[in-house]
Length: 162
Image (cartoon, rainbow, N blue to C red; front, top):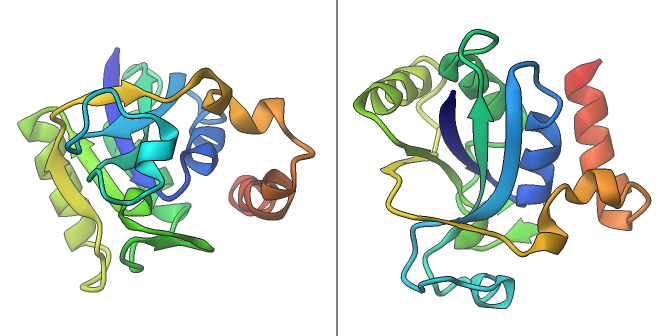
C-alpha cells in the first residue's frame, strides 16, 4: 500500500473522483500542512491558516501507480488557476501535490514538466495531515442530490468517466 496527497479545489470533488479509480483503497478528506494544529473547517475557510483542502489516497501499487494517479489528478482539475477551482476561491483551494518521498517529488515534477509552462500546482513535502470532520467524508456519495454535488461534482465525474 502507498499513500498520495492531492489538493485540487474542494476536497469533495477530489474524493469523489479518486473513490472511483481502480486500485484506490481509501480516499479521506482533510487538511494539509498549515499553521493551525487540528484545524476545523471554519478555520480553513478563512484562508488564513495556510492549509489546503486535500485528499489522502491509499492505493494498491499492484493495481495502479502514483504516476497513473497523477494523470487522473491533472485531468480532473484546472492546474493553471492559482488558488481557485470553479467558484471556490482561496489558498485552501490551491492545486498541490504533497509528496511523501523523493520518488513522488521527482515523478510529480517530471509530470508537470511534460504538461505545460502554465501549471501553478504546488509541489511540497507533506508535513502533517489532519482528517476533516466526519460530515466531509464520503460527501458526494452521501449527498448526491445536494446542489453543489449536482452542479459541480456529477458533471465532472460524467466528463472524466465517459
